[in-house]
Image (cartoon, rainbow, N blue to C red; front, side, top):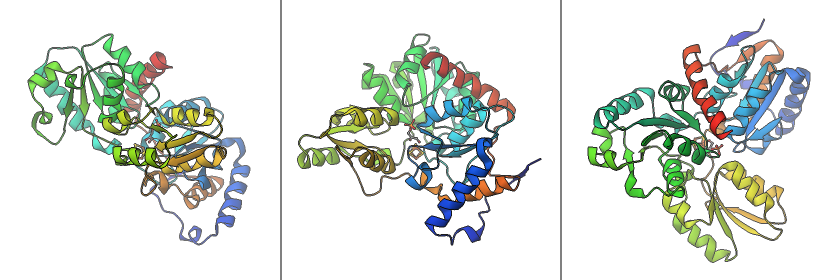
Length: 366
Ligand code: 13P
Ligand code: SF4
């Protein structure tokens, strides 16, 4: 019988360990736990963590991995809170999901809460008789996924957003998309929807800061949320990259602004960017607009190509960075002693409806 321990109480004795000591204790604990544990690492994690991941991927790939590792009793999710929640929803009842540091949240996911979304939904329902479907980006709390499940909607990721919008528009006139306005706008624009047919809903203003005419015209209503990492990239940085490297190909994540995506040569999810750079020809030059740890890893793993970040100053995700070797060691050694620290559990009712929305995504964009 294992004990569940809350909250995050990292032992101070771990903070003084050298990198080599941390590495060898993590490796030893992992080996001792064997197939009871699976470690999932998001691409934005630091190298010191990624090297211990059994699987690495974007949020979609890792959610799928979590659902397919039923032999592991413990899923240690090296990523952020919403990802660990999705893993818990998709995992089997006998499995426990652990987030090494509870402070690893996501500022974008925090930009839409269930009360705000329910209020928006009610106001939109009163303002229009058009059929409306809610779509939430994977980067959202479980309660928003459940909201989509209950209201005929689905989850999407940056890898399959176009397919999910297409699925929704086959059945409805309008989509309410949250929490990332940029992913919604960039994907809809790529699908040919003009900007005039997109409205923005600001949850901090009366009637979302919009009006009935704009909602009437809109095919997609975009929640005013963003990723603080990807929103930092600018068109000026792209111009500078082209001046410094005239042969470079600029590729960015669709969480960047519309102007940045328009100025880039290509855009796509984390997995898409990895594939594009890895399949690029030797000698090619890549200016990449996404999280710094991933870009640096791409550069290291493709030494015959030039790969650099459009903004190498501050473009790391501070909350992803919270997962450090100390926390990974702490959760592993606690497991060895029979204690589950930092478990992530989504309540049954929320899980049930969130699963409906996740299954719709898997069914229509597999
Ligand atoms: P993906 O992992 O779906 O590419 O999303 C990027 C991101 O911001 C993860 O938090
Ligand atoms: Fe959230 Fe952006 Fe960090 Fe992803 S990169 S976890 S969306 S803040």
